[in-house]
Image (cartoon, rainbow, N blue to C red; front, side, top):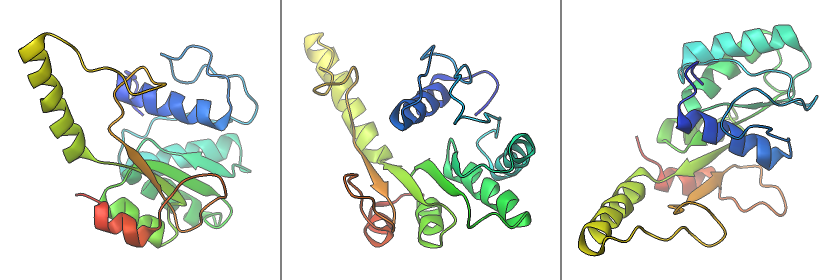
Length: 179
């Protein structure tokens, strides 16, 4: 997360909150939730040092945090280091997003409990296809069924699957990762 709240930060944050069952109030603004389960939002800058500092700040607000969502896997690695420094790395589930190879390896090593793996090359190729279709016909691509956007896919990567939640393990995830 960064202070200017670019759309990717907002969409990731608000999507997690909504998926967790938290009333997101204004879907275009981070941090306006009033649900008592959400004890902290902090800025990580999407990097490991920022994730470390943000986790330290959040632990000062509530040392009993048990679930952490980070904007990306470098921030998750930093949050883990902060938790490890106070002996809480086994007590907190960290979830993240991106699915790059370092992040999937961190899932395999128990640093991150799960990550949502995206597919940048597929996103890019479908984006080019959409541009071509628009250039040829003037028509925008239709949103995916039930969504207000065109879904290019995401897969949850975890070695601790939960019944009712589709996921794949890290071995398969490493075969699909990037970066």
